[in-house]
Length: 185
Image (cartoon, rainbow, N blue to C red; front, side, top):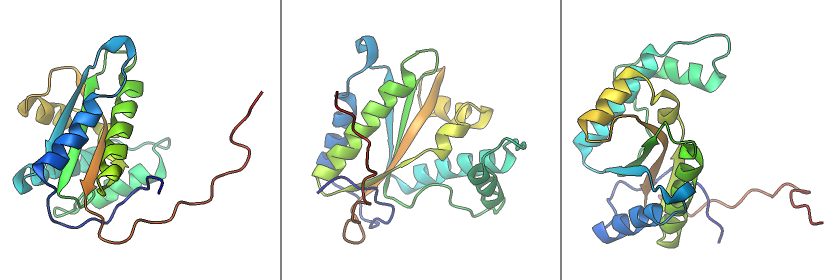
């Protein structure tokens, strides 16, 4: 079965071996010039998930909004106004992938690592979903202070996050693929 995004997961934590296999798959990704400049942070304890959620909630509530701000970001800002808002996907493991923002390949390398982790999770029967909201705010002072506090090197931004857990239901069916995507010459 092809990998699908899984947003609804069970609250039970995966085993240490499963988490390690998923994280290891991230470190096995190709990277430009073999830099391997990412840091992978697996938040699994309730207090760590709550702390990161609160950073994202406060940052979202205070983020600047202009006419150019995408509608979904405006909706997230509105959601973040509630003091008990949960800004992350509900999952027992939440992985932050950070990379030195000065590196030209940061986004490409991060995408490869996140994709590898998603495929590894799927191969273990574990669901995952890529979450972009934290990456959009990662450069702001509050998320930067949080990253520094947890030991992420200075100059790193979050390039993507994964919510990971055992699927609550059967995996969803893949949507029909768009025609005319592949061009052979």
